[in-house]
Length: 388
Ligand SMILES: *Cc1c(COP(=O)(O)O)cnc(C)c1O
Image 1 (cartoon, helix red, strand yellow):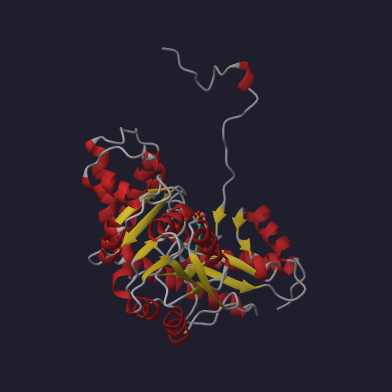
Image 2 (cartoon, rainbow, N blue to C red):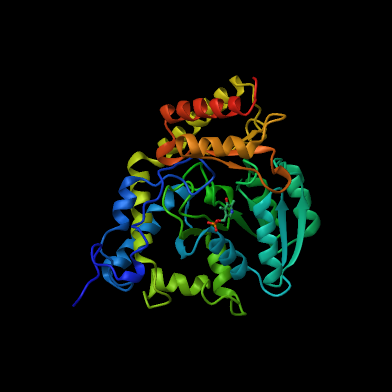
């Protein structure tokens, strides 16, 4: 058997040097910083996707996801695909032709749910509010009582705006109307409490690369007993074969019969990321994120900057800071990247040019890193003409 080694590469590929990604501090909304133990897990030898060892890895992950989701008596599973695959699985499995889907629309990702709903044949109604705001309990309940939908969707932590949407009033009004509730927990899972079971969420999806500090590629999901019962009774086949939750559940949890080849290394990585979280304790992790958020907000306000979202409605792992008058935010971000390899992102849609989106999560969420980030942000802003 011949193997190509680093030293004897064929002439045609010799012009590609070995991969050397730049060193970055990922202070953006995601992907977030990956824990060194997770990188190690990625490099472990793969086994087959039906190997008893791998089945155990999947089961460990389902167990380890329970605390971050607050799963109660619900079910957890994992979709092979990024957060959007979890979103599409949620929509495709719970929409049938003509299903009335009510969506709370106050940011970018709600619109993605709407687009997917339409493509699946749902009759979509939307309740729109400006980006950065949230829906009060009364607004949420009134909307659902008026529209009488069969399915309701909201985004728990809206990454495009930095706002957290409370879910209890949405869920109880939806259940009164006989509807199931989808919550987008892509940014919240692992960063802030999701409390899926106590909130009354029926279907939640997330991703591996934000609050869980793992590379992108998997989408953890939560399903309530009501959602599982509904799925079992669904009469028409789900239009997406790959994202059919009944088939995926059967592979991962029931028969372990082949459905698709699970991305083995990514499952190793997710398992390790969840073990790291379990060792710290999920509550300690939430608290650490909250402390870093408080320190960060104090620091930016001391610089004379303003947060976009009112206190009490902010995602503690993702800060939206208003760009001061007369400052070109893209240049500030470029300076941070060039000087220190710090990545933060800007806003888009109605918030383009108006906010910085700054994530402080996972291994980066320490007091020391917050002070480092604040100091570098101050330097870049000053260099771009900002005078506090
Ligand atoms: C990132 C994100 C998504 C999409 O996830 P991908 O992993 O990029 O596919 C969906 N919803 C929210 C709230 C997000 O932040």
